[in-house]
Length: 631
Ligand code: ADP
Ligand code: MG
Image 1 (cartoon, rainbow, N blue to C red):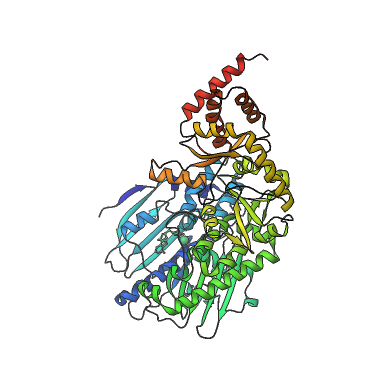
Image 2 (image 1 turned 90 degrees about the vertical axis):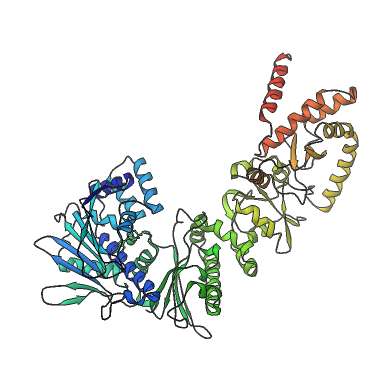
């Protein structure tokens, strides 16, 4: 292999450019990132060695070594971890795979303001290995993959390209040499070739790293970190910052977590858990294949980076570690799926997390809302996914509602506000709060002051399929079935009135039904409208219009689900149509208006019209007629 020059991916170039020129004031985090990568590499080696013990050479201690050269102005980080093959090197360093960084670049392009804001962005996203260019004019990396004979040398000045070349390395692992930029007080660049500076940084960010971080000095080798697993230490002795640094290391997130949860289980099964709820969702949280799982340790040895068996899918946003002394060290994936102990741990963790969320919700609503905004949708999945804990998860749900459209409410709060005589919890599903809020289905609710929950997440459709009752009250869609709001007396009165009107409007209803016979199964008078002339209502057992739309998108031409068209007997359009029929029973206008009212009802609730061109034509004709009429 001859020396090759490669261009960085465009996004990486932009990122590096940003990094090099930013005035970001915490440049020392580069060391945390490189040590974190080295520690990951050692974890991976140990994990691969479970099945290939020959990878661990006898007598060699897994560790991270730091070397400083004050004269040459270099800082070198060695690890004897898994290393990288040529392909891995090109894939991992040189391109951006992480969604976070890609998003950073996107945001960066939009930013027109100064370096301070860009520094802020770096702080939010974190950019791992590349952060070394904040402090270096040149970075040289020599790596040899476990199981390979030859090594590779990677070198870059961070300017747009890098070179790859064959190299020598006695043993597996990675060595990264930073050729440091001169220290500069103004630019907040410390002297990173200074022993004292480096020692302080390691103490601050990397004390918990489970492998020795050894600093080679003139006289001796000094281990800088305590290596004490942070979950073993009494919580009273660990600072928030230390927990946050640990979280950043295991989650690859640069932001501090929103919440931490410690669990120490003793008894039939023993384990320790240190869990975190992030402050923001990773960008892929709601996609198939989103990263999930906790780090699994067995007797303080990292066994698996992401053990998905430890949590149900709907809690996939939780990060953290579980350390068990009861599992065997050579635990395998297959085994995990059926292991009784894993199941018990999972049960314990689940209970702990749900309890912690419940507590947060009752003690610190502000914090709970911060949790809910990114992760609420995920939690909602739990209602259908986890029948065993359905009641607990249900208590954690929040919805926007007509009571106060700017605020979220829980089901319990909804119930406490229910009107006298109200026996159901009403909701309406739809694509967005705006669409739902302005739907004609809510008119009578608004008039009677009955609260309606707005269910606008896609997962809500599934939710209401499963969650049919809460606290003995039925959950009822405001867009389904016949509506009866008010006290018993009011209901009776309403019914009598409707029966009476029904007779008067009989012909109109029959003619409209005739005109729309292929699309609606019934035309009836409405009790839910005050200002709109018409709306469409689903039968009790029907899927919502939104679900119908999704099904159609997936299955192509699906027959239209026949719904019920409700007409508002107090609306002028409806009364005048009736009057027309009273005079001339065969009036054709009614047919034309039936189509228009049907299209109107679809649009008003946010649904699509099957034949928009036809509707547009009818609408234009109507406008023309309107213009012909005297002003
Ligand atoms: P992250 O650690 O979040 O994945 P980084 O930019 O820090 O992002 O590192 C990118 C990738 O480069 C790592 O995921 C890893 O695969 C690889 N890598 C970095 N440093 C090392 C190392 N010392 N040994 C082996 N692989 C490494
Ligand atoms: Mg990293």
